[in-house]
Amino acid sequence: MNLKDHWEGVYTTKAAHAVSWYQPRAVRSLSLIEQTGLPLSAAIIDIGGGASTLVDDLLAAGHTDLTVLDLSAAALRAAQARVGEPGAALTWLEADITQAELPSQAFDLWHDRAVFHFLTAAGDRLAYLQAVQRALRPGGHMIIATFAEDGPDKCSGLAVQRYSAESLHTEVGEAFTLLRHEQEAHATPFGTVQSFIYCLFRLNPGSFPARAVQAE
Figure 1 (cartoon, one colour):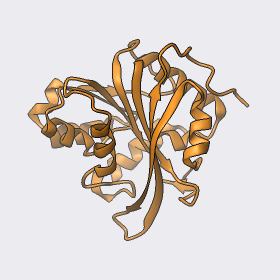
Figure 2 (figure 1 turned 30 degrees about the vertical axis):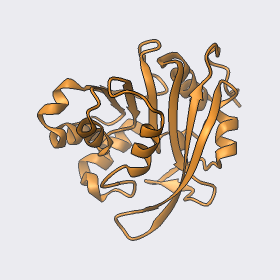
Figure 3 (figure 1 turned 90 degrees about the vertical axis):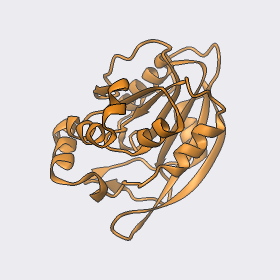
Figure 4 (figure 1 turned 135 degrees about the vertical axis):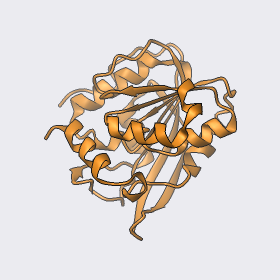
């Protein structure tokens, strides 16, 4: 399956508020970002941000250095249309995070709600974590939200990898310190509930990139 074609299909045939992962407000993510204590000038990248409303609330809160990355051009267009003129000051990247060339040590915070759990191949997870360790500044924060152990085993027709806080920490490796984790019961637009785990990590200063996991 061509993943780009898959996600372009999703976002060209469904409204942004009609997908299972839609949130009117990314309340849990916003709370964890606030808990980092980062200033409003901090550089934040939202991986798989697509049509998410997180960027709207970050702009409204006064954040000024925001990057949204998504595999789907259609998802990015939906977000840009919704955000309007303030979005002109943001960076919008159409890319596969396992292949993206991000600038080195450019970001203070890496946010990902529901991308990492789609990486079912160890090589893809390794590429992802290498990208994090290159792009985050030393001591930078990473928020990853995935389906919890009691969450769905598929999403949008694709298999996912479910995690506990402990297994996600094991996966990302010793380069990261787990600062906090929270469970969320996400109510979908269809009246069902999906169990998520949110983890806030800090990249340990002096960590060496790239050997967080081994390919199978």
